[in-house]
Amino acid sequence: MYFREKKKHRITSMPHSRGQVWHSGVTRGATLSLRTAARAPRTPTGTAASTLSAIPKIPAPTAPQCGRHKSVVLRGVKATNNKISMENLAKGIFVFAGVLSLTYMAVTQRRDFDDTPAPGLLNPAWMASVPDSRPLSEVTLPGSHNTMARYGGAPIRCQSWPLALQLRAGVRFLDVRVRHVKGNLTIHHGVVYQRAHFGDVLEDVAAFLHERPTEAVLMRLKEEFSETNDIYGSVVSYIHRYAHWDLLWHSRLVPTMTQARGKLIVLQDFIGPDLGMRYGSLDIADEWKVPTFFHLPAKWETVHKHLAAAEAGNKAQMFLTYSSGAGIFAYPISVARHINARLLDHLVLRAGKPRRYGIVAMDFPDAPLLQTIINFN
Picture 1: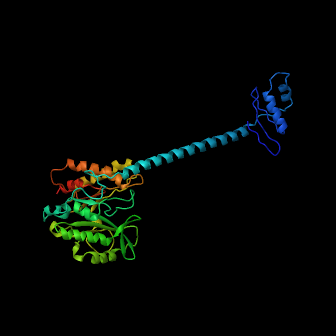
Picture 2: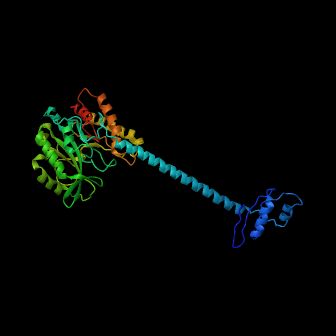
Picture 3: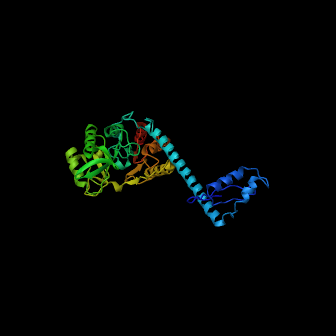
């Protein structure tokens, strides 16, 4: 039992041999006599008996007092358990983050995945063998999601090769995001500046198409990390400064390979007069939200279904399937490690005859995966 000390009086507790509790609001001297009595031999006529008989007996605390004490104790236990649970959760997250960081630190070049600085195989002129009369909507094209996102660490990076090497490795669809500030178009992935501007993109594409006039490049262009909804004028200005107007395919219609060769086909994902085809005219699967590794099967299912839809769908319409994804516990690089492997396995099983899969946009693809896609033509 518990007693309070108030001013000069202290309340102490002492178990009695009969299960009673003694209370005393007496001074320190009386408290000492209690302790002496507790140590003395317990005989009917001894010192302990005479000392105890001099101390008044006070009834045990009432039920409400005990209830309040029990409530305090329970609340203390509950708080302690909650604290332990939060500590365990924090430790678990720390360990999980450590495992993820080790995964991201490893530089890998596999048949389906590559986060090294350069591809192991180049295929810069593969479109030369595609028949001139074939509409671009019937061509199977490898592409890169968030093409310029090479900086910002694991949560941001989507590619490891610079644009010029992506094009020479066989990538023909680009996903370019620009931030618009006072007429300037800088390349961004979310808040992270990618150390380039739209002019750098145009220069690389123009140089590649000048060197390889049999090829065509499709580029989705959209505004990111700014909300001006007014990038058309700046885009036109950059085209005149860093490329030339005739580089573009100036129509909403799907070109044939003859019409597309040597051209940049803008898939316009912003408002304004036509610069090329409209991005929204494509049949697109971009289920990019992959919160955790547990959501990878669902992500793959969307990829698998849309590839099947592209193969069986309207040949006059272009299809675009993004195999990329990201989330707070599943960064782009980790999603690519898993989805790219399943994608390659899926495509290898169907190799051997022409198939129309449309555009397949990926994070961190390796050259053999690109070649597998190209071979369906």
